[in-house]
Length: 314
Ligand code: TUI
Image 1 (cartoon, rainbow, N blue to C red):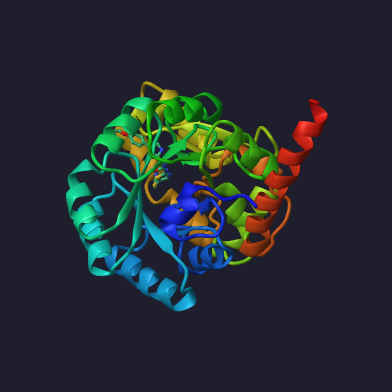
Image 2: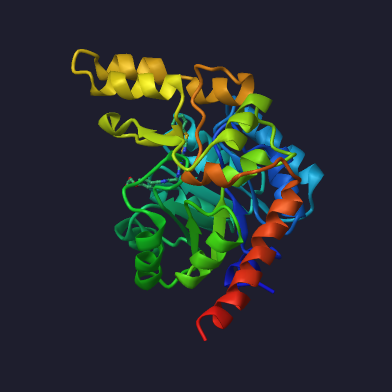
């Protein structure tokens, strides 16, 4: 049975987090993952603070298991959300795209377990010093906003640097990736892209279809020139975005205006001019299935390869 200290810390059965995907990770998905024994997360990127509050309340009705909220720190309402999770009695918070140090005293006072997503050793150390309970080390294989380093070198360097548990994220899609993450010293894994295909995931059917059709070379990173690199599926939209940002005659304001609202349009409308954020492992996602089957496949698949590997290299 795959368990680790993070399971005891958070009261979960399996060391499997569902990524807090912007516009995607709602109560339906989070509760399904938590009910399956993993850690479901609700995204703070939704139709405003009250919409996120409503998802938290819905999630409490759908599960009696622990779940958390992922707060995207670059969002204009990040401060409001930071306060709201305390009011709603949320027990676990993960953060992305910045440092949550300013909110840490308030959250610790409220007894919240705080787990920042980081993409470097320096920030992992800073977060540990600020009182983080664990960190998610997220490699650039991930979908959405990405850092520089990839999972294979990032995770062991973070594991060596900190004493708190490390959750590996980026490029993990099945039991093999999960086992590899545990080999690198991770205490848990976080999986985003595979959960896009969960039956309980409410993205537009076109989004799921695009994920199921993806291959190994289907993603692209855009937005580097804007200081906000994002991995998404290659589409006419993302290719146009890439062309615009490398064209000196197009201002960064024009590029940003082109991208504005594009993730929401993909998630809710299946708009061809949307941004279909996805990780490099999109090509490994084969079918739509219940979140419970995904959690169990990750756990049992990891157990299987971890046993088999000792026989292969005897
Ligand atoms: O946050 C993410 N991934 C995301 S957020 C998001 S929302 C969005 N993005 C673009 C358009 C529309 C909506 C989509 N994907 N992952 C967690 C993550 N955080 N990865 C890397 C980082 C990170 C980067 C720099 C964390 C901290 C950091 O620190 C900077 C600093 O302040 O030192």
